[in-house]
Length: 202
Image 1 (cartoon, rainbow, N blue to C red):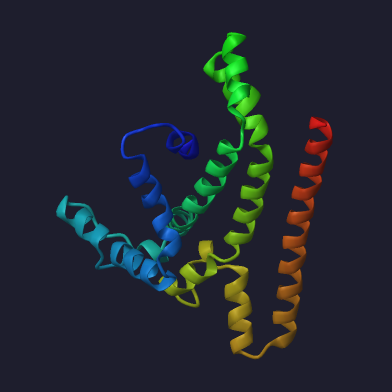
Image 2: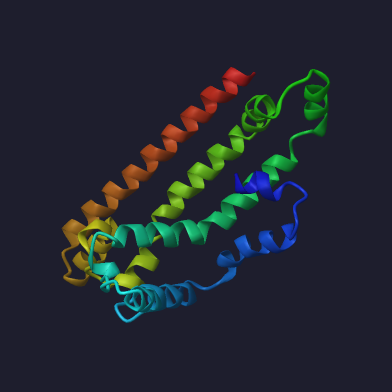
């Protein structure tokens, strides 16, 4: 939806594009520092809550921790996905929309019949890259919440890191193999789905 919006001639379009790309060029340490300022016990968000009479929340030691990490992940990666979708949108020939207009097709029909159909390869790429990038969110989680965070955000990488520090090589190796197999299974399923869709389109 953001890519469709930014693909139109809207006011401040270039500024909006820049705003979504900025998280890609900002170092992870700087990003984590901003989020720590926001969600720390003495952070900005708790100060706002206390100002309005609400009690403070220990964001990273409660069930809210998973929502914080999801928010960080989406904010960090949305610009990359928008760029990919914009590239896919600009590769769709304008003639298809002109023919659809001559045939009297509505906006919804053009969206599902042309835009989303021809964006399917890009969508597969975005899903694949998002799955792979989701395994890298450990960096932000580790820097924000430490080596032993709340159970809802305790990841496989936390387990591997802690087992490595305790020199439990067997568990580290087992976890690494398990994670590699999970990534391979996800990638294989995505490629099979894409191949089936290409066959259907042909």
